[in-house]
Length: 599
Image (cartoon, rainbow, N blue to C red; front, top):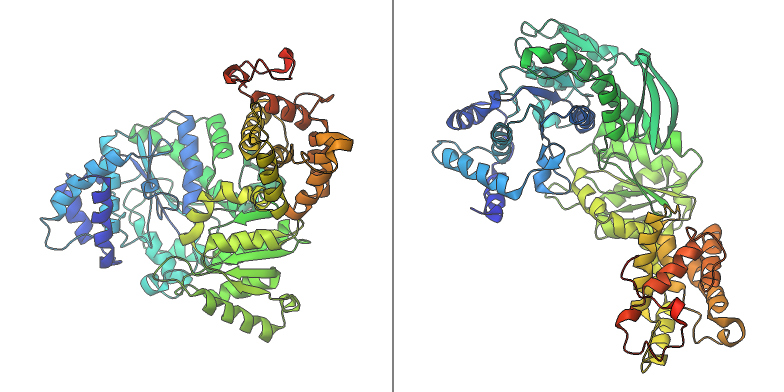
């Protein structure tokens, strides 16, 4: 078996679907020598927030030098991210080795395990093999009958927020869903809950738990939280007289953070029973500050700003709407939306559409997807019925081929002051996150596709076709851009990457123009670049910086760490004078020739 075979084996089990129950997974684990009891565990159930809470816990433990295994679902970027050891995805070789052992056992069983049961068994087997100190295990769905609910005794259980989702399996009320999730608590366990309303607290209080550990049930106290500072890049807060910083914004991130803090407090009390080290306050503080969770209000460095969020059910959409109102009360919102048909789509529409200036929908890549055209029709019907302001816009809702094309169109059509929010389903997050670099360089792409720019670059190339020494075409411009960005990083220059690239790509654009003879190509280039930059969507302030750098890069007077100085150095370093056949006849003085391979 190789890695492709392992993936094919898992995919062959997807047709079995979801089969709640523990008999099959227990039989599989028995054949593997019961690895589920080999490593002390923290077990988490809940509708939303499981990944974020465990990310905080994981990073705190890593600060203490612990060997931490983590099992999560679903994967967003790569199949291997379901299994982490010390914050890193496991190797393909490790997955193959474990999968071979699991398949050998599964083929002897009268009933085949599902893909989730196989993946869960793989987690337990892998963490035992790798001698992990502790394993952090997320329920896939529910709790009582979830395949992860086979760990005999745990350091503690955590309950994240509970809301309506997977009702066909878990029940049609919050109370029924909560009862299913509370089923993970075993004799001797301790339960830490996320902040919850009194109605759900009463369900927890009256649940028929087995005999629990000394700490029993620990409710996270919101009243001990005090926010010091918050913006879209993070929050400073005080909890139980200690100050912390987290990189995720909004109330939901705060609730998850203090739930993790309560979990770590209980962990410290029980660690000795499991032969585990206690964590210091500084390790916990540094762990929270280091934690990040892709796709949870992730801010892309685009123009305009784009936020990618994993909100995909009722509560998550409502909480996302609250966060948008808090941070962007006076901004116009463009949504990129794709959703699964079995979700509460009307709730999403009711929560998000009133905030929208424009909406771009698409069909997610899932057999459960709601077709983009159907989503568009439902949004337009809602807008007409409720007289939403979005209907005053021209073509307020468009249907695109994919999440990436919808995001690209949103970037092109939105103004600098707008905010783009992509959400609706976890199925497309990976694609957007993988394309983050391209999206963040969208304006550079517009320069490259600009008709005048392409025509002028071609003119420069043709004019210098027979030239023996330094040419100034596209290849040179790209080399300058790459070197300039390296220099900007080395000099801690705060200029954005797409600004550095724009200045580099346009720095010779004034050559062979009518203005060059009178002004020189530097000044001529600054004038010509202005129009290209406007069409590409750069702000007035950015255009000023870029054009000044183009104008001054021949002989910059400013600090070499500023853009003009960086552009000058990059221009010089892009020239491989030490390899040039025409170096002896070159008109450049020797002191300007580049004879170094270093930046």
